[in-house]
Length: 304
Ligand code: CP
Image 1 (cartoon, protein in one colour):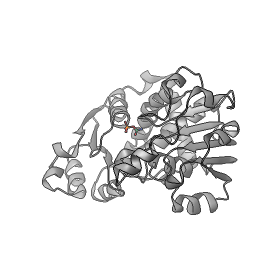
Image 2 (cartoon, helix red, strand yellow):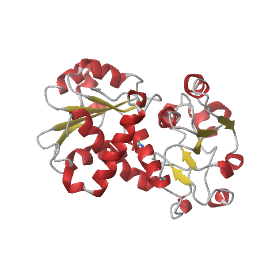
Image 3 (cartoon, rainbow, N blue to C red):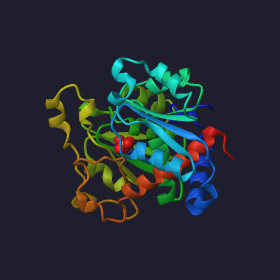
C-alpha cells in the first residue's frame, strides 16, 4: 500500500497492527525517536486544522524526522491557480511523504496519482478522514479494551461529518458492532453509507432524532460538530447548529462505562461541564492522534 486515502484501504489486520505499534510507541517512545531520521513530511493543508496538522508534525518530529509545508492555500501557488496534481508532483521532489487536507472531495486521491511519494488523506471535504478514524479506533481500543461487540452512537451532523463516515466504515468490519445514528432529519447519514456499508454488511442500526432515547444503550457516544463550512446557507446552519448539546443531565441514563468521543473542535455540542467526567475521552483522543500517526508514517515509509 503506497497511500492512505480511505480507511477501507486498510484491512482490519493492518489497522490492528497500526494500533499495536501505536501502543508500543506509547510504552517505549525512546525506541522510536530515530526511526525517521533524515526523512521529511510535507503537510499540505488547504483548509484550517489544529489537531491533524500539528499532530502529524509532532509525530514526525518525535520519529526524528523533519517537516515542511503550508497551512493555508493562499500561502502556496494554489493561489496562482496551480493544480493539486502539479503541487503533489512538485512536493515529491522535496519530501518523502505528504499529508494533505483539502476542502474538495477526492483531492488527496488526485494528489496520490501524481505524487511519487506516499500521500495521506488528512480530510477531504465531507468525504473521509481516515487518520481521525485510526485515532478514534486507538482511543476506543484503549478505553474499552476491544473494538468489537459494542453499541456506538454517532450524534450530530451525520450528513457532512466525514469523521463519522470513516468511523462507520471501519467499525462495521468488527464483529458485533451496532449503531445508533442520532441526527436532525436534514443531516441524516448519506445514502451510500446506509446502503453500501450498513445494509450490505447486515449491520444493526437505529436512526433516531433523540439523544435521550439512545443514551441508555450506548457503550460509545461519538459527538460531532455541525460544520458551518459545509452549509450553503447561513440560515440552515443557525437553525441546526444546536440540535444536540450534551449536558450533565443527559448522562443520568448513560452507562457508567460510557466513552464519550469527539473529533474536535467542539463549538457548543458538549458542555464544558462534561470535561471533568471520567467518561469524557476527547482530550485523551487528541493524544492518541499523535501516536497512531507515528505508526502510520512508519508503515508508509517502510520503516521497520
Ligand atoms: N479532528 C480534526 O480533524 O481536527 P482539526 O480540524 O483541528 O485538524
